[in-house]
Image (cartoon, rainbow, N blue to C red):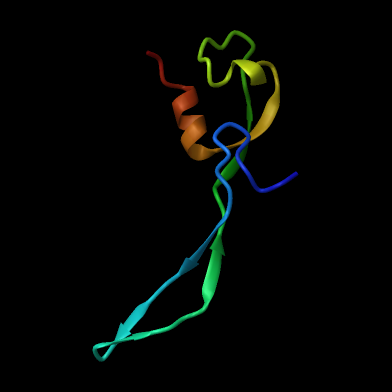
Length: 73
């Protein structure tokens, strides 16, 4: 299984942090950042269109999607 959110397709990205040292930028190494993925069970009677296809399944989703899962319109 890849390190990617099944719902919103959020995946890893490269980050380069620049450190300013005495008026000049000090180049630093690149680093890969991963999304915060958690196992979550999608309930069967979900009404949100975004989650309907995963109803009754246990999937890996990012925390942003898990937070929106509990919201009611």
